[in-house]
Amino acid sequence: MTEATVSRWAREGNWDARRREQNSSSAALVNSLMLAAKKISELIITKLNKGETDDIDGITKLSDNIAKVMASAKRIAKGITKDEIIDVIIDLEQWMMQRAETDGELTPELLTTINGLHKKYIEYISAQEA
Image (cartoon, rainbow, N blue to C red; front, side, top):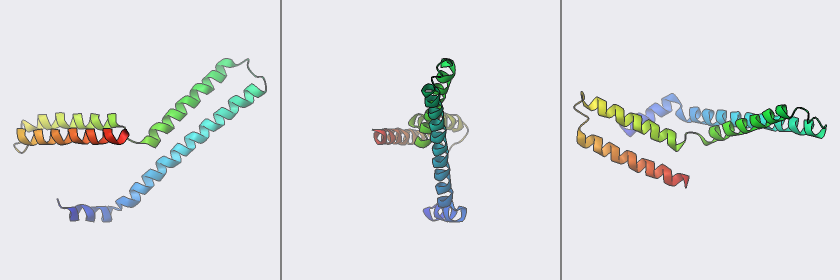
């Protein structure tokens, strides 16, 4: 597979537009979640301003919902986490080890090289987080 082939696939598949669409969809979802959290907050403030403290359990549940909505928005805004990437790499390496038993192309040397590159990539994404 050459760079020209991948570039052709990207053009034909309209990958750039799809990436923009996915990013804007995520942004729209985050905005919707933030708006929902704001409305819940306003409801709590309204209840407190009216002296409606009889239903403290209801207010507590609303507060918990704000925390959950905000946490969801944060996860979506952040995208894929380092832990998720590491999990995928581990799964891939386990699969390659199993596959190496029947696939002569997956030599011990190649697996060692791939493992080394995975470690370097994990170091790279860890440095990006800092």
